[in-house]
Length: 566
Image (tube, rainbow, N blue to C red; front, top):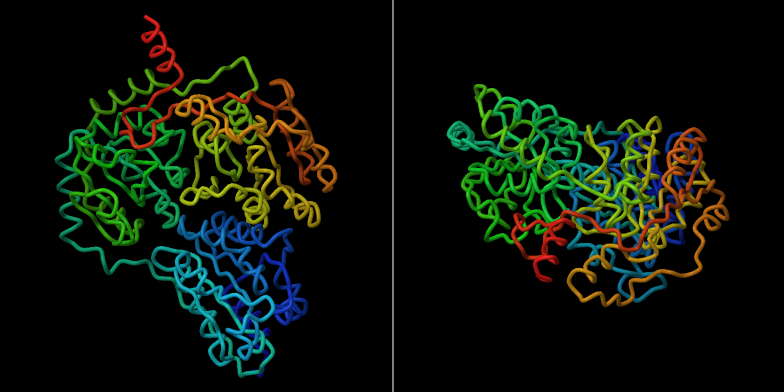
């Protein structure tokens, strides 16, 4: 038993939880905690980001890459509100994160004091839980509870706001071993498992869709065994990338708005759709009333709230996905669906992903990154065309290798996330893929990378426009390019060099691979700007609100245009 200040208790609780890295930005109300961190800098590494939003995204990226709880810190007022976008990003994608903020002293709360904000109230809709600590006797138990809530069941971000007087007060502290995280199994019912087995056995054309829950529950091995045993093709959502090997013969590609035709058509033709750890996002299902209209739907998920929320299902099993799949695998005999798989293979041959091979394009950039990394890298992305190209053309073979903002679609996410991923997985090569519009938002984090020599490789796919918005304007808004052109004098190479990074400009296909290989060999922060055509598009595409079987590509547009001319 020791008598410690509140700030020292915070640090001791972080050590209890096995935290080795935190990301943050100091300020007046959190100074006591930063002073305590200074005393423990040999035990906990603190990364000072260029902006609090970068700290939140870095904590998120650390969590996604490692499976551990990410931690970020900020002071009161604007420091705390600058975390909000990062907290919301983590919330939408079910990422375990603890955000620690400090507030004004209890006596100043509610008086519009300098840099006072009710951050607990602000973040209530975008956290799994949040706390404000006004009594030092509750500090340690609250922090321990925050970590437990963040990492159990369906994970998510938790905010702990601590008043400044609590960080200065003193209290007894005694070390506690963290409680073991137990997988959620009490909701897995025998009758639900038996119903699932019956549906699978009776299916002639089963299809599996894998989502982010498969990665969260570490269920990749079980998914693989399940797919092989029941002989079913497998598609993934954006968040499920890597849960099933992207090079496996059963893999059909991503499903949804920019999914492959094989996945979209296969789901539409299937008679049983098994959805594992996915929530039927609108970008996945398209027109919900026409989604998988020929199939019975079996949903496997840890969160009962997701059942029948977006799509009505025929059956479900609630609980930890890894455990559910283990129990299903134990009950299932091998099945034969050779005819169905042969049909899927024919569709793969008929509907491959296509792009213009003669030019430097987004798909070529991604394929070349895959080639030089041999598929063994962590890829973070921003949001837009480059994100979809990364999902389509990089073959993710393992979980926790694509870190991207799926639910919130946060431009500016990837660079901070790449810093967190590299800090958590120092032995991995880490790329962040950005468009020029996204890179502008948080490119100041290159200065963080160079300050700490965090060797991430930032690839900027520069088309001098807001590419995905321009694509929609081209296809659906009569080519009225309202405020999407970025054709100005900004020089990303000079900016990167000014922040201390090595930088390359690539304008031709033959320049790309040497730049990538040199960037990896240098093992320092590198920015590679790749200039592509402003009208490169992501195909296939499903129009908003249309059924996913309405996916079209460039060839379809050419045929349609030709028919209209005739």
